[in-house]
Length: 280
Image (cartoon, rainbow, N blue to C red):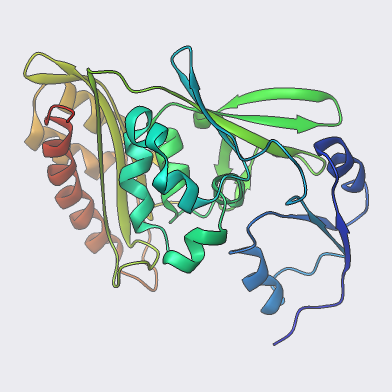
């Protein structure tokens, strides 16, 4: 199937992109790894496609003052190979090999994945687990939105019709930071049936400030707050039991709700072990 007819414009700057978004039924194009597929299946039919790839300065990876800033046009492969990501954002480094396949990571962008907000995608969950935020440019200037407030529902975010996500910011990892990541997929590179991105801080032999973000089990990344509290109290069995009330997945083409809950518990035990391991 071919996409429906559309006009094309190449944005010269973020301001130019915002100006072009005044056009009715306009869509932004970054890596295109999700959008092009939906265009070809006619699940999306914009009248104007606005290409962001000509904008300079949106693919930066910079660590400073305890924060890591990643530009929205940073390719997955760039993040995967980045020494700064490996050192200061190890959770993202852990997640990267699970995202699609090499060809997808060569074109797909971090900002595009987060803005698209697929509930089975890895990066939105990582952003939530890290307690990060997104920087958004719009008609009324710049604003920052916390990850916990950014995702609103199924493919729904805080982005307005004339907003451009320009970067994400996350706390830089320290010697006491811990990160864990795991997912179940039918084949490597497929969307996960269930996945878990997690962060914590070392607290003696235990953990504190635990953040668990499950994906593939709801309409958006799901925090498991009762399980977080149980892990912080060194109650691993209690954390797994708490998932029964923290998560409410639905049956889908991948697995039944009961299977997803069971897999979530298996992942939690695996990831909890990762969180207890000192950083290399």
